[in-house]
Image (cartoon, rainbow, N blue to C red):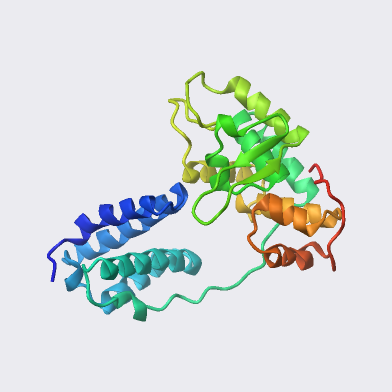
Length: 287
């Protein structure tokens, strides 16, 4: 049995994720989740894979739950752990996948949330002072982009009327329209943007591309400031989908613009929007 430590294997696993084309956001999340596992194992004097027992992974899960992580967050972290253990078996660092027997915590399934027009207008009002965050919010509300896609938009992918969303992980490349409200907000930010060479649109004051976690935290801060505590940045994308369904936009068009792999995924939002069947309009609405 190999004597490689878990600590030495983690960078190899992360590197392999990159070689397989996993998205930067996924790689960042896996690294963070597995560093938590490494910290837990180190505290319990466990250094090598062959020292780990399935009961250690059960204890790790329970420790996360006791630290007030939500069952959904813990379940996501366990997915990272299970992927890591499968990789160790596939690469002969372990002979048995001990993570198979570790169960996920029960996750309450809740309906997605969406903002009303009054609520997303209130959010616009409080974010006016920050052109960068305002542009991000408009891009999600008006184009239905995922937060990771906003982070990865490059200058070369932008025209006056559309955005090219580059393919990543299992998501193929797609084109999404850029309407006037989103274009106006983006133009205002680009005028204020630090005069630093970078292929990425959204950057820090030092020119580094903004990480997903930083964008999420910044947008959520303004959501709280707008006194909309029950929402998160992910609900902006849901708002885009729901408002377009309510306004009779064709589901196939919405599915293509949002990057849903299956039309059935988009159809799930019909009941959320209070609509029984797809509309026929071939133009997206402005929110």
